[in-house]
Length: 371
Image 1 (tube, rainbow, N blue to C red):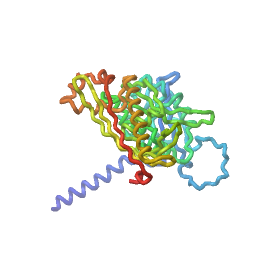
Image 2: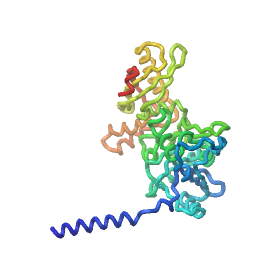
Image 3: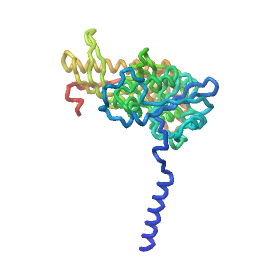
Image 4: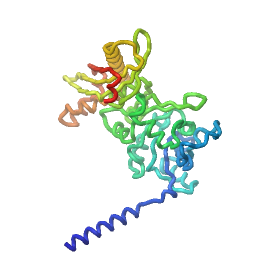
């Protein structure tokens, strides 16, 4: 019994010592909120690191309103940049100009410029996945133009803390047209062959430096090939289960109106008969009529028709660009005995001729969204 007690005590002491050995003082760390990768002018890349200012995070929401209204929009963040041939060489250079050690454990967003994305991003994704500081649940995106400019102009209107801003902005539960793609999702989609990778497309849209992030970028392997619309991003979320609750535009008698929609994750089956593929898609939707003028049956019929058409149009667009953004290939894999059989089937060539049967069942009523 004494030996058991001794072993338990030894294990406890060793555990405590190990936990202290890797600890860091918070006040000596510079925590990165966002990383941006642009094409460099002299080197391979220009890396931009966005930090949250400690004063901005610690300030309370009830600050005096006497602050100057023309205050710089990015005043709660600090941005530094450096050109180098790879990410970590750039970080090493940037660290020389700081009094603190750069830490990536709290990074919320990784953004590639469109130019970098078109050349290929897998090497950057793999480098960050192999780094034990960088978390695989960090969100990823593509930016039209310079990522450095985007970081300088992004404006968290309702958040003092930019880390929370990115978390809420790219969460699947906040906006029906926002893609919430993590670094891990991106890596699996790029390296697999059952689904094409997609990322939200960010841009600065006007002279007031307002930003927009509702479009989607489509990849073949690790290279950006197509930019799709906000409507496509919304349909993508419906098909992949990312549309949990949001507004949805409909039309009745040439009059536009909006409903509050809640969509269940669809049930998708892929049937193959020889070289022919057929997708069976069934979706349950709950609609709050809001300002709709008409009966519940009319609302349900209009909603069914609109979503079914939107999904079929999106599938046809996928076929035109030869990209399976929905992940039909991952579902189809289950119908093969071995992975080699799936590879030999040459799925993407068959995907061009896939047919889809879409069934949408809508239930309407203001109380349904509370379930």
